[in-house]
Amino acid sequence: MKRFSTQKAEIMRIKSFYRQLILEGRVDTSHESIKKLLGPDCAFHIYRIKKMKSNLK
Image 1: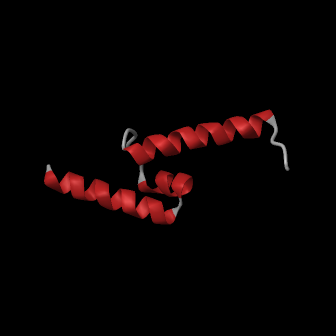
Image 2: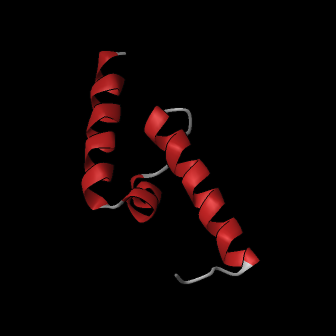
């Protein structure tokens, strides 16, 4: 098993934390940022949901 350095482990922990916040809808950010953190497929669905919600207002 490959061991991570402390710095890499901390980066992974922070990315995971923000990923969870985005998935829960507690953080509002750009489509490009979401795509970098979550991947294009997941980002598309989140962006679509945000767009639908904004149309309801």
